[in-house]
Image (cartoon, rainbow, N blue to C red; front, side, top):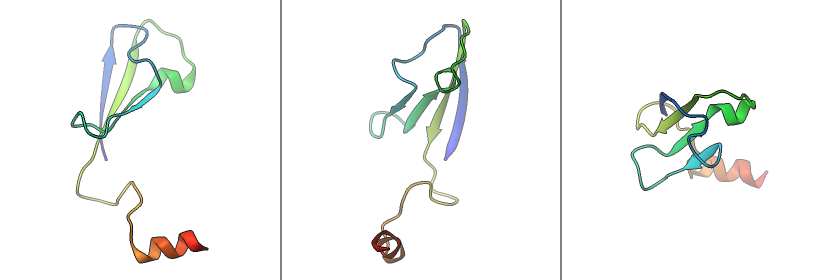
Length: 72
């Protein structure tokens, strides 16, 4: 995953703390950090998550080893 942090000059940026957007945007998830910590402030910060093809996978990968772990 690649992450982009962004600040906004408003107290609330989105209706929920985490919104998944798997098809509509280049990013797959956006998280409003103050919602997770319970902080109150006139500004807010969000993190955009972008998928990348390099590095370790962040989501389950269907393969025989994964199926065996699931069966256990």
